[in-house]
Length: 213
Image (cartoon, rainbow, N blue to C red; front, side):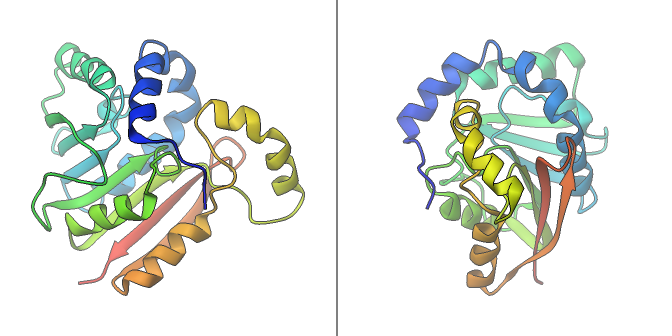
């Protein structure tokens, strides 16, 4: 299991990161975020972005999308709302403070749920994934963009050596894609349909998990 921060600690960390988050993450995460947005919208227009943060990816959606963003941090959401207002992002329908492990949406509300760079940070990732599945329509997909640690080999060894640095900026090499795959199998209704490497040099991965009809 991954060492995960408590919700209270996460709120404090996000409040500290909010003013500089865009500067640190924008260009590094843009290719992966765009890939996640494209995969989500391909499922249908109504998308939940879980852990929307400062809204870095909100401008990547097409105008016909209907995007609902949630995040634990009010500080992050204020910056996201500022982007929406300044850029006139009318496809963003709402931004709400919400814990991704307790989503306030009815069952089968969305064509897709995307979570970018957060699933390894959530204290109870399987609970969050189950909530994503609950609000997802049959045939829809959970789309994750994240760094997942290599299961073995020389890259895995390097990741272990670099783990203190990775942890400091919010990424855990201890969290493997196999953990999400195991959750999907256990549900009996979710199926991993794609796991592919993304920029830079495969550090980020795109994972698509489809809900059977």
